[in-house]
View (tube, rainbow, N blue to C red):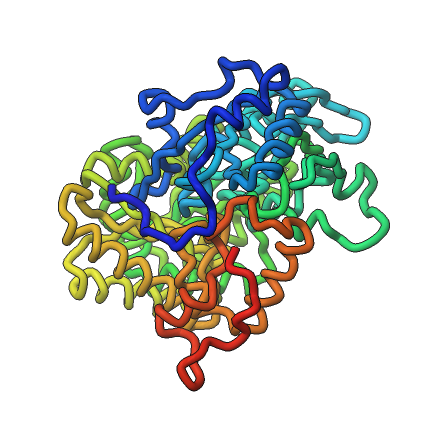
Amino acid sequence: MTDAPMIDSPFKPVDLPGLMARLAGQVPEHCILYRQEDTRPYECDGLSLYRTLPPVVILPENEEQVVAVVKACKAMNIPIVARGAGTGLSGGAMPHAQGVLLGLAKLNRILDIDTASATALVQPGVRNLAISEAASPYGLYYAPDPSSQIACSIGGNIAENSGGVHCLKYGLTVHNVLKVRMVTIDGDIVELGANAPDSPGADLLAAFIGSEGMLGIVTEVTVKLIPKPACARVIMASFSSVEAAGDAVTRIIAAGIIPAGLEMMDKRAIHMVEPFVKAGYDLSASAILLCESDGTDEEVADEIERMQAVFRQAGATGLQVSQSEHERLTFWAGRKNAFPAAGRVSPDYYCMDGTIPRRHLARVLTAIEEMEDEYGLRCANVFHAGDGNLHPLILFDSNSPDEVERAERFGAAILELCVQVGGTVTGEHGVGLEKINQMCVQFARAELDFFLALKRAFDPYGLLNPEKVIPTLSRCAEYGRMHVHAGEIRFPDIPRF
């Protein structure tokens, strides 16, 4: 790990005595951490390349304390970075060197499970999986299931618009959240969305979800719950090449089949995961697909038969259908444990998160394989094949500055290739700090100006998670992705949040 890149920040060092004085009587002292041994665990999120030691960490226990912190920070011009469980993979929750890290882990209560409306009201620190566990006795569950669902929080899921292996059929976070209660930078309480299917006015909820903590601080969330399917089975299909597996993905969708989940792993990922999870993966395959069907027994039986026919036509070298719920969960456990499995074969890994049109899967995977030789690093590929969301895991050693530098360039090249083939630089992990340069590649200046205008409408002071997500004009110019005319950058009046 390395220190975060130095940024010409407009903020001053935190006046800790002054901040403590403002919060006295409003936030208990035990909720305010400032000693290095206490703040060190918060120096980064799941992104392993950068770190910044926060000058102060505040862990509020209720909404009133969140409001007090936000008002104090606004009055003192102190940046605020909200943090959930710290499982993010783009540096979005990395602290600001002159700011407050606002940890929401103590806001972790499930406030209500409404079986009549099939909704759950929860605080932002509630774990993703805990929602489904609480709803399970009522035959309900929360559909988005990121690989980190055992640990990641719903507040963080909202910040990144997280998905998971079942997002193809059931959607991302934005499709499963009805309402958010949030604190604005002025300390006001605002509710976006509604318990009804629609709400009057502009759809600010959709703009808020995926905004990476730049527009407000979440304090309550209302999510949709759906009935647990009567039956679910998974096909593990083996292929002799990634090209054949990619073709099979295209054929499944073209056949009008929308699987509950459709995931792909290449040979390196298979061999990385199988000794760790013992999921029963085909070690002779160059690529495998995990394709799930859910519904009634009759629906699943029919769809499994149709899927198998498509896979055979696509040249599958082997087909294995789960014969029990235990075997189905074991197949998925391998896919969901791909990231920790990387720790058994490499000191560190750098997880990318680009999205591409499905028809380019084989082309992009072949290009990534060529990049392994170019950058001298191994890469294991696991991804949501159904919607083209790639998660290449670049394996490297953070103790080697040269390998860190090559890993960064390797990751940037993958993301820029995604843009080149008509995709995007992120699917569900957000932009944060990791992909901010590639935002200069994907978007024109007019589009970035619009993003800035939206942030300015919510946060005119630029205090919420500043210097991330939206690149400045100077950053894009330095990255070589913006034209400089007559020695001047255009639109110099745009604020440098």
